[in-house]
Length: 322
Image (cartoon, rainbow, N blue to C red):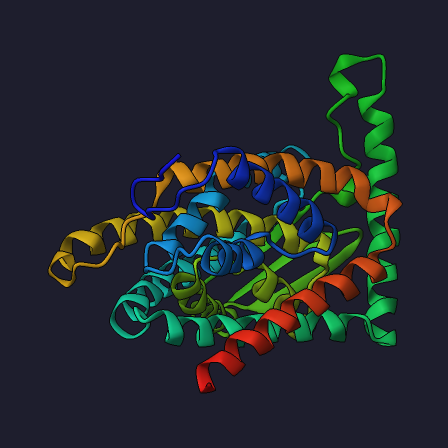
């Protein structure tokens, strides 16, 4: 089968299985599958034109909605945080699209850029395995278990009206929201952050995400947890939703850019069919990853994942200088 935009010739089950396998593996390590799907397209499928970036964003559009629905249903969405991230990420993605087309159309330069991003993400995963980081992870795991147990009991209740109930203490409640500061409550504690400090951070992440072809959640979430001391249990839904919205914005902007830069003769618009098959496989992989995560040691998953990311990073960066 030949995919129209990318020119890739593979059976349709190849992108399906690739999306499933990558998302199954990466979701257990808390990283988006887009980080590995793009290198798969570049190095295995030979898809190196700028169109590879929005094709990876299509993966997010197809694979993410089920996860967003779950967070909304469980009332775990910190909506003010979500809108602040979206407000910064979407413009950043648009800037990233222009940088991708103007300055990174050459596969060699783009691989170097991809290598730098993978180096950061792989290094971040290794950092998370340090003792202090493991302690924070253990605390978050206990919190997740505490909130999941009563929620499961509610879903198993014979009274249908109680099945979707979430204990009040584990519902994210907005205390105040202004253009300067956001405050919300969760698990009996109040958390806050300065809007003007978060905005430039997510704007920069958006630029990287738009040029690479990812949602940026694996970059944004650790930064919010580390620098702003926000609980990961409340950050996850906001980051996932912003990834979904920014991916839509990125695909639209790439499509518009394809018209504006038509004279360059480059494939810029996304390959919808290829990206859709990746996304369908990814949706299944994320579901299976969530089910299998409790049976797989997270430390082992992160070690393997960081090793893969760092190997690719060294290969791409080293290839630039050869």
